[in-house]
Length: 636
Ligand code: WTA
Image (cartoon, rainbow, N blue to C red; front, side, top):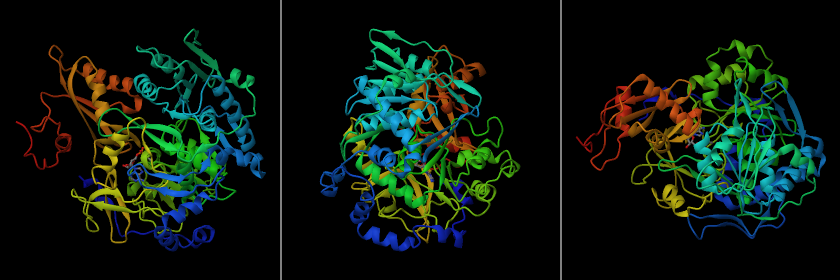
């Protein structure tokens, strides 16, 4: 199970330099950790008091209805007050919130004051379309600043945003619109990615063309590329141009006073079974958690230029492109397009041009850029960098070294942050003064109590592999699966009663450092993106030629995992290279181009247990030529 982990050296340590320690806000990590762990509620109340509240909470944590925890009970706030309003009313009004670069080289510079202005206007546009507190709005856009503006506008009026990553295709988008029962969709005419035009508006049109119809009555279209699109104007479906609606809207808008526990957004993510589930995050606890983790881990100061190269459509973008950096009043860089377009030094040119000081990305991106060699970053002045970050999957030692030496010039600590859509923010992560071990997220963040356990839930000794669990609640935790409390309790809190089960396996070493091994629950990480084998298999089975399908992930040099599909054909269909190619394309069409399988194989039978469950573990072992392990439950 963990053969790929052998390359990690648990004794290799990189200590912080005197310069890093001198600049760090938190100098004595152990002392802060000890104090926070001794009284978590006190620690979080202190973090919360750095934010604005319309009304202070009267209880930090309510754990009377486990696993449905409540934080900052009785508190009134709105994340937009902290992310936008308070800066726009202060000396930060003219400070840049975002520096944006399009793939075509165009640029935009947006101050906190301008951001507030646009958020207000778009909030009024949404109100004008009849969006009320608690209504859902689906946002399906490319990487333009109107994406955070749309998210913030929803939050401002108490609507719940549901961002769908622009790389998903028609069926995935439709499913999420239907499940969330969104009233409005916000999209773009198109997006530029790696020299290609993604027809976002056409995809929305196709997703909404369905029976039974979706509740969507209005679609707002931001003109990014100028590609001609069809604008509907019918009795039950209206399309509106963003710029026209904005022109007509007032720039004055009151921020809704929200209860700390009121929903802020839902975000779909893949699990081990069934369709993707919508994790729900709230205004209060999520604000405090993302604000505080970002501040501690990236140690942001007023003059930082921060760039998180993820997509806003995933949790990393929600927490650490939009909400946490804005709450901290930081200037962020957003880049629209592909990392190696038109040349492999695109990213490095952006770091140099905007004097980026913190770069947060994913191992898959590092491995992808590493392939082009170290001459590309050498062409640029990367001396503005002081801190690097990694997220999404374990970072292999080779990629760590390359990032550390060639991008950070062996000066910049790498913050390897382990967390999940469900956790809202960083859970296992260093801060800049923590000694690093390449491939380890080091130790749990302040107040976070993790434990690695065996099948029975007993703690395993150091260096042994087991299931990663979290023992106590934290403010940024998802509150539920939208509309399905039972599934939330079953998925996360029943495998090990009383604990949060992460779905990951891990080891802890003798120094208390955590080493994530990977998912243990049929969730695949492909290029850092999260897919469930179940959703990929149902995409394959939806093809008329396929009777049954199994999907596994196999190691891939750049993407971490690659998707492999095994199918049984229906009678009357024959295996051929064309059919296999058609099946790969079919998955790309149903789910998204990022989910296109590396390979689809036609087989005569799938290995199953006697109770009929597909033994993916066995398929995986066979594909890699590894020992088959325990096959006593295999039906023959
Ligand atoms: C994996 C992404 C090792 C892990 C923020 C987790 C990581 C899943 C790391 C969540 C890391 C994330 N080291 N593995 N630093 N960060 N993972 O919900 O398997 O898209 O369970 O959230 O990514 O993926 P998600």
